Image (cartoon, rainbow over all chains, first blue to last red; front, side, top):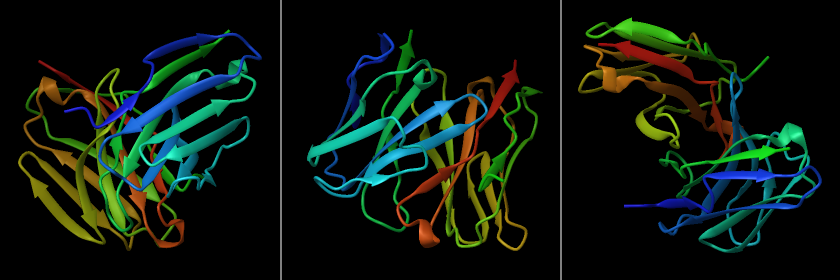
Length: 113
Length: 112
């Protein structure tokens, strides 16, 4: 019954490394999102995509980029990882506009050392 | 000022208590109001949603929206230890389009 799958549960990377976080959904959703979750700050939107090859900046895009080459896959890229990017990263998808339930992946806990 | 304010808690209650979780918001254009529940080491899952103002009940859970006060609530009756989780309010609509704005989440502990 898995709907949104993130490639890793836990990652440890070194400062300056390029990091790829992958997300795949099997519900044919148009919209996909990347959030980071930090204590006391809730979920903050990094980037989202409403179609293949389309992307929009969220509230905290600095230091990140994304790629959506196929409808089911949305990748988050940390160009040069820094310690302040240590966080829980959550991918989500939903269909259409208006109200639509967002389905989340299980999260990737990234530690940058 | 954040668009959505939510007390992060933690909130600790005894089993059987009525729990009240709340969020305030500043954007009057929000139309869809949601509550997500997140268990430890899991992604959030939709618990309830309401459109515009009013109440919605689902079993032990009641969601309320007061657009005039820009205030939403989630009530949990007869709380159970299995309700222990983080509860995030979320809102969408208006000029934000597809963007969903989340509260910080309130961590709830229900003691047996």
